[in-house]
Amino acid sequence: MTERQQHRRMRGAGVAAGVLCACLAGSGCAEQGAAAEDAHGEGAVQVVRRAADALVEARSSKAHTSMEMATGGTRVTIRGEGVYNFRKQLGRLKVLLPQDPAGATAQRPIMELLAPGALYMKNRGAGVPEDKWVRVDTQTLSDGNLVTGGATDPFAAAEVLRGARKAAYVGEEKVAGTAVRHYRGTADLGIAAEEASRGNAQALAAAAKGFATDQVPFDVFLDEDGRIRKVRHRFSFVNGQQDGAVAVASTTVLYDFGAPADVRLPDSDDIYAGKIAED
Image (cartoon, one colour):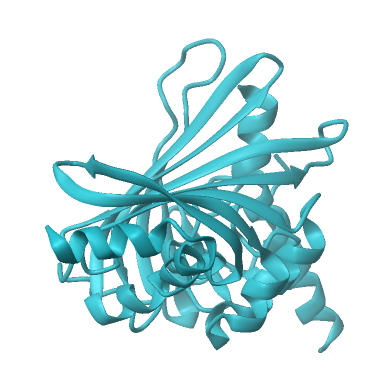
């Protein structure tokens, strides 16, 4: 890797970190049989670990994301919405930042494109022209972009569950009117990295080393086809602006499976290569 490439990679990581840090600083019988199996820890673990494969079979979906963190006694929430292609591991999200503490109008939405090993952001600000994208190598981020971009990649969120070490069947519930089975447990990011697809393996391995702990508590809600309808992770994130770790709760809701999800990545000419202002 040349010195120029290293400089661009470090600079891109700093831009992505700004998305999070700015917010931290500013503000019947078959069913009975399944339930019986789910009641056993080992059975529930296997069901949860297969959730990512069920999404690949579903091909695509629409997604809502939210990321919550508490800082200075104030809870900050970053929201996103968009589509995701699980077979190609490509997604598009519109990420909405919260209002500033003074109650000013919310900032312009940040457009994010998610791809294996990369995050593309538009409307990022920081001196970047409005018609340009910023590219970040997510494998260089200490959290594998599970937190930094302000939204967790939906398929990465599912692949974290491949590292489930323990899980318990909680019961039947409904998510947006759909009957689901609720599981609760803990995933190991190191194990998840070993079992993940090639597109997420390195990013999850980076998160296993970069987070305050590689143990991730989760709640996941699966439909009758084993697909994730909702998953909530609780990450422990080390941020330079705070003393100690910051607790971050990331929630992903998936719906409208099979929805069109044609995501086109920017051409090289559309990627900003100039200087990015410090936040």
